[in-house]
Length: 309
Image 1: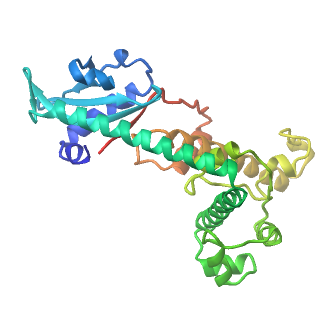
Image 2: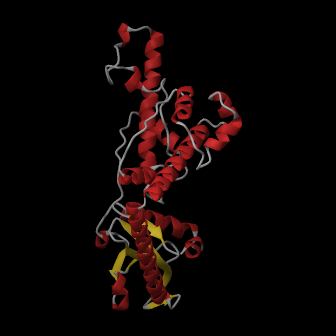
Image 3: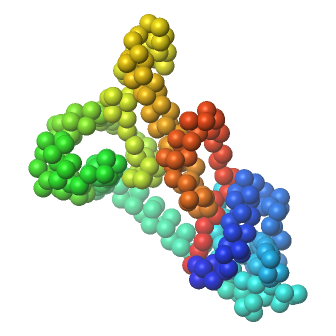
């Protein structure tokens, strides 16, 4: 699939991305503009379907795909061409069937392994401790690295900022390093950030892990945290009640707060779709929307498209 896609012309790739971006907003595949048909014969075993698109070269491009357990995820298993009633390559349908079968088998294998792990966790206290320790140490190490990268600092520079040794920062960014809560308290205090230590269910712990991304992780420090520094809530003092310097500071804080919210929402939206405009960064898009006063309306894709090898 990857080789087939990379072999497409720039025009064909643009057309495909445009069609899929439109289809992502529509849950029923029959309503996709590019939808061709559900495939018959043995391909019905996996409910395979076909989409088509064309561009200026008049070539009929076809993509064969299937849905996962829910119709929130679509997986492409074969890319090919079509003319008349002939596929190119000729064995495209057989290849699609084989790949769809492999996808289902991998899914079943994964589920079996998952259920085996759950059974072991339910009956083994030592394994539960190892499981929790692994999740916590990895998440903390990833957060610390994300905070350092957000500031654009080397480990030595970050260590100087938080008044620690570089070797300590290096160790903290490695999963498996034992960390005392007091160490994390000192780190967060130096960064003017808070810390939450929370007992949770395993599902909440796993959910947080799945949603976490170093690229998206962003925490407001004390100077940016308008909800904390302004105890009355979002209401700010009137400008005629404060001097110009204070008013300007509060405006900057509000701007940073709105920018942070927009960046996080944009990051969530981009993360859910592999097709988006990479020419504009999250920060530039957020700054543009704040400066123009436009309200961001988040659109959650109805379908996520993936590619199977």
